[in-house]
Image (cartoon, rainbow over all chains, first blue to last red; front, side, top):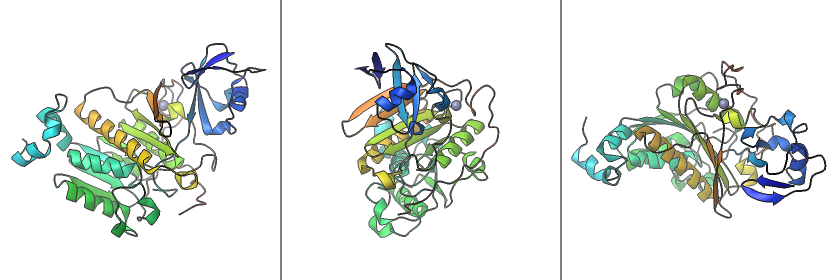
Amino acid sequence: MNLIISGKSEEVSLNEGTVLELLKVKKVEMPEMVSVELNGNILRQHEYAATTVKEGDQIEFLYFMGGGSLNCYE
Amino acid sequence: MSLTESQIERYSRHIILKDVGGAGQQKILDSKVLIIGAGGLGAPAALYLAAAGVGTIGIVDADNVDLSNLQRQIIHFTPDVNQPKVESARQKMAELNPDVKVITYQTRVYSENISEMIKDYDFIIDGTDNFPTKFLINDACVLAGKPFSHGGILRFNGQTLTYSPGHACYRCIFPEPPPKGAVPTCSQAGILGAVAGMLGTIQAAEALRCIIGKGKLLTDRLLTFNALDMDFRTINIRKNPNCAICGANPSITELVDYEPPACDLKR
Ligand SMILES: [Zn+2]
């Protein structure tokens, strides 16, 4: 099916069609590292397995990113 | 108060801008910005805000300058190694612009001291590395109704969002901190020094635009970029009505310290 992932149109083949499966197909190995936005709404992690995507959906993977200093605490 | 002759010359390239002008420059001179972290993001932000004439700049950092900081933390120079970062940063800002009053806080921020620290400032810049502190800054600024700039960098990537009361906060995107060790830090994964400069400079520009009240802040939008391909995008973010801190029925009503991250790579 065709999805808009990170602003780009992409053909993705999914069996169950869940967000969790999409994360695996897109090789996001640790789902806890990203926040998933589906059509403008941020999903909670416990929703990944039960939420399905459909043709034309817009998906953003928003990654956790830290900051500029070397140490764990600034 | 009006601008002196030397101030008119120093800030002439600001004053000539239609959206700044003498009135905007006066607002900048009267403003107070707190920078949390004198590292890769805080260093360029501090230099640009000092150069711009922000009247009071607070800078928070508990650490000393390390040789491996100098690749990107451009406010610190080689002779500053082993000196407190806040002192090194204060010296450079004072030399750059004597109009600026610098207040240093050589400490970490935690739930007991952050509210007192931010209360006198107009804008806060998050230049920290770790998620417990990022969530703490978000929560403290939301509770106090203070605008702040979130910044994150990793490898060749950067992301930034500006919070302002009534708009989406950091928790609207990331409801909870990631599990310990799930996200590599810059010390583990690396960071291109110039990427830190790009992001910290965007944060400084957000602070200045918030102060002069011109243009459209990065509210309800997450700016992300990948400097390997030099690709920039902004992703629209909706304020989450169920957000634990800024939602209609917040479950977080007082500040908490999350467990500190495992500090397996101190240097
Ligand atoms: Zn929120």
